[in-house]
Amino acid sequence: MRIAGRLTGTVLSAVLATMVLPTPAAAASTVVVAVNGNDSAAGTLDQPLRTVQKAVDRAKAGDTILVRGGTYALTDNITITTSGTATQPISLGSYQGERVVIDGEQLPASHTPVGGSIPRAERGAVHQEASYWRVSGLEIVNGPYGFYCDGCNNNVFSRLSTHDNYESGFQLQGASAGNQILNLDSYGNRDPRKNGESADGLAIKEGSGSGNVVRGARLWNNVDDGYDAWKFASPIVVENTIAYGNGFNRWSFPDFAGDGNGFKLGGGSPAPAVAHTLRNSLAYRNAAHGVTDNGNPGALALSRTTTFRNTGTGFDADGSGGKAVLTANLSVADARPAALGSGTTSTGNSWDLGGTWNDSSVVSTNTGAITGPRSTDGSLPPARDLLVPKNGAAVGARF
Image 1: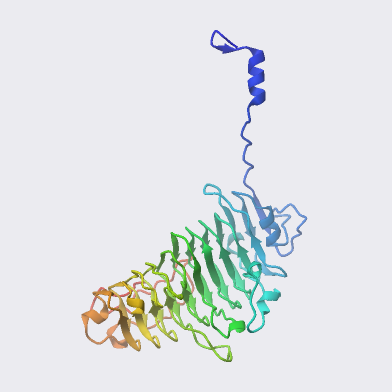
Image 2: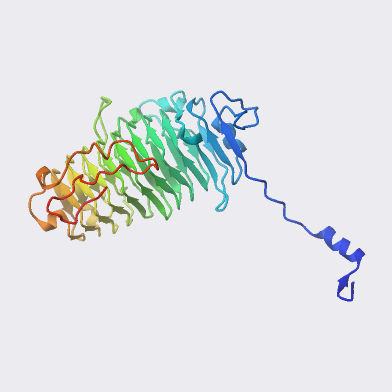
């Protein structure tokens, strides 16, 4: 009862006894992993864990996992299923920039026979089904996929290198939204089990989810496509990205089935109509097209992108009567510059400007700079003269 606006001691004690007070959030911690560690250790710099999986299993929202340099040979893939939060993401990365190699050569799924299938849970040397992670600075090789993420939201993947895997280097699929894939290098990925039909550098496919962004990637010498958005039903933004040398049978696969596009912006039977964006990017010396809609009838937005010496068409945008909008793009010495559908809008592109666009029409065709070491922050190395028109036309990408 109230007496003079105050609770009596008895009543106050009763009220407090019935209150459910919030449990204080556990303090975020840092866990260290090293090749000479022990999974029974404390996980500190002086007493590191031995496996990344043990650190992942311990991780809670806000935690940071730091992996010391060395090669971590897996006998089971690293599986991430615990999510962070918007305010407390979980971080996984290399310790002070040391070279960390995650090697999936010993995983059984890496050696799936021709015509076989990889069980979903075994896809990826790193297999993630979780959200709000920040993963950076890892090198992932020889896996059944390199990094595989299904049903992943609001993650940031930065400065990863995924190469020589037995399927796509990096694959995002399923209901996945709000992810950023930044400064990825993905190359030399191949799929013996399908004779080259499906191993891409980067695949965002077979799913949906808004807000996915790719920026600053280099995707090269993969057996199928550099970038593949097959059957992904929501718009993706790709910018400042390079795809080259894809689709060649460097592995002497029989019945070779690699497609060889730089950027494949859709597809499926039927292909969903999706308004993907590709801007300030470069596709060169691919076995098929530089950029293709692959039958996507959506309103693709292709701008300030350059294609160079692709075996097929520079900009293949004639699929299913598409509504693509092409603005200020440049095709140099492709088998043909562009294939446009009846609903396509083409403005200010090199083929609209007329004239001959070959090696002698640009300042430099030397791709050595753009394929060299990245800048210290992980961004693409500068290549200011690469495929820049000598006549000053404001078309094509700039690096």
